[in-house]
Amino acid sequence: RESPDFYGLLQLDSKWKTVCTSLLIMLLAMCQLSSKAFACALCITESSTILAAYLGVDMAFAILFKVARDDFTYWVPIDSATTTFLVACIVRVSMKIILDFTGLLQARHPYEYGGGYFSLTILTSPIICLYFGSRYLAYVDNE
Image (cartoon, rainbow, N blue to C red; front, top):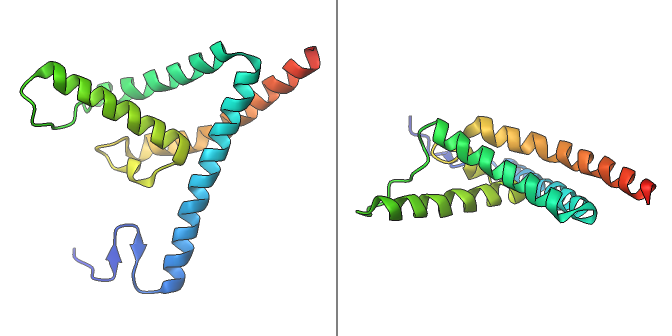
């Protein structure tokens, strides 16, 4: 259905709705960046190995999620299967990093990560931040 008052995420009928929606999108991105960066900073003070393991497992889960959905490769007009796979790896890893640190709303699209995985990422970031915060407090108390 066509709607001339709606484009993308923002309704065009009211400036107030547009401003509120824009501010909420920026707030979501700011909170996502803050929680993920703070969790990484707390984790790296304890051990860089733990941070690498956490980020690696998170990335592996995202890639396995895409493989399980049979949606890992993008449609890229390249004849070589190897090059297509490499391009898909670069794009998927880049998009996962962007999603993790900014909460980019376009990642909700089914061809990216979908609404379920997007929501899981948004909900787990503060939980991970609290977890690494408690680990940091225990680490500081032991020293």
